Every structure is written in C-alpha cells, then in structure tokens.
Length: 304
Image (cartoon, rainbow, N blue to C red; front, side):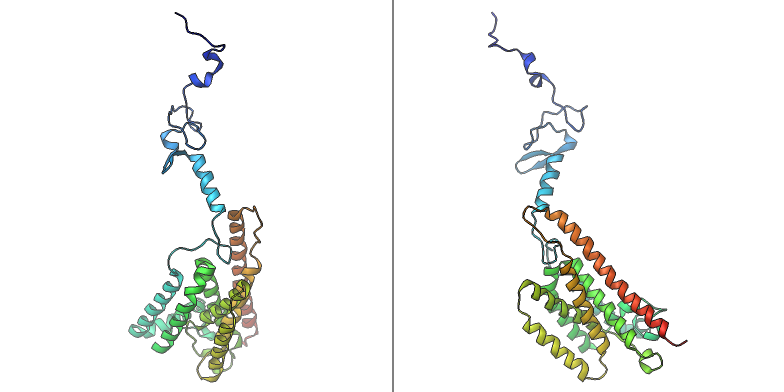
C-alpha cells in the first residue's frame, strides 16, 4: 500500500535528510544544537549554560554584549570589585618599610631615602622614599589619611587609575623637592621621606572628582588649607613635596577627566572603555615625562 505524497517528496527538503555537522568542524557529526542559533555544535564548541547549550560563537557574542552594557566608573573604566586593594597594599608596604627602618636602618635609609644630591645615581628613591617615614606618628597620620581617601577614591576612579595618580603624585612631590633644593646649600644633601606627597595628590584628586561629579568640595578645600597651614608652620616639613604632590595629583586627575571619551546613546561602551584606557595611559606617561624633563633641566643648571 502506497503512502500519499501530499505533493512533495523527501528530496524537496535535503536538510531533513542531511547529517548535522558542526559549522566549525565539518568533519564532526553533532546532534546537539545551540539554544540560541540552532546550529549543531560539537563537544569542543559546546558551552553549557543554565538555559542549555550554546555554541562558542553565541557565547562570545553574548559576552561582548554584556561587556558593552556593563556600568563604568567615573573615569570610564570597569567597576572594580571587592575592597580598595591598592590602598591596603600601599599601607602594608609602608608598614613593612617602617619595620625595616627599625630593624635595618642603615640599609633601608641608605637605599630608600630621597636625597637631591644623590637622586640621579639612585633614581628609584623618587618612589621608594614615599614608603619611608620619620616616626610612628608620621606613619599613622599618613596611613589614616590614605585610608580615608582610598575608601572613596579607589572605587570611584578604579584600581589602576587610583594607583597611577598616587604614585605619580609621589614622583611629583620628590621632583619638586629636587627642583627647589639649593645645590650649594644644606638642602641638597638633606633627606626627604614620607607618603605625604601621594596623600596630597589624593586630596587634589578628591577635589577634582567631587567638582566634576557635582559633589561637595567645601570640606576637602578646608582640609587642604589646614594641611598647607601645618606644612608652612611646623619645622622639618617638606613644603616642596606637599605642594608638588598636590599640583601633580590635581593636574593628572583633571587630565583624566578631560580625556575621557563622551558616551552617546547606542555607543559601544566597551570600545569607549578601551579608548579611555589608552588616552589615560598616555596622560600618565606624559606627566611622568614632564617630571623627567624638569629633573633634566634642573640638573643642567647645577654647578659642576
């Protein structure tokens, strides 16, 4: 007994008869299909999810879409997760450095202390001196200030940008010490140490961030003013380092905001984030280069 054909045959639908093969690996037969595009996917191309199996192409496309819609911080970078690890890391290094000062003072001071007259043969001291402190109160005050500003600034700016502004501020502070030291005076061979340059840079960064985000700035202005009064009132405080860190941190933070690409409706936010990262890296490099140029210019004016 013949079956009715209803006007078509199996040859009219070859896809129903063809063996399903993986598009990426045509030599592999697969009866498992992607839940999104319905294409066959071999075991190497299958990505198990809570809603079923996806192919590798669909998984990448979904990941890209999620990255494009992911929220960004004030600087255009990805939202950081967890605690302010950069702040805690710097604090831990400062504490370890202070313990080293107590245990091996000659070695730690000899290798880490910033002295203008020896800075060119020990260039690492432009940064390492920012981890050393002159006493327990000096350490506690700087660590408390760093803790307070880090709790707010690091999540707002992102880990990388926060670290960049802090360390460039330390560099800027010691650069100012080098610039304003008298080569024929006692200051040329006087040591400078402390995280104050970086902390002052963070003070300036808070002012710029709050200003741009519409937050309160009166309190940070008062804090900066009080610290400047203390800087110029009490002896043995490096006003050059404090002012240098303040100016450097403020300029760099303002540059990061100025170079942040503007997001428009429908724009690829992931592409904007990558562009922002490149522009901000260039701004950080430019600020470091400026410090280097100022150091070179000062060195050329030092008497032989």
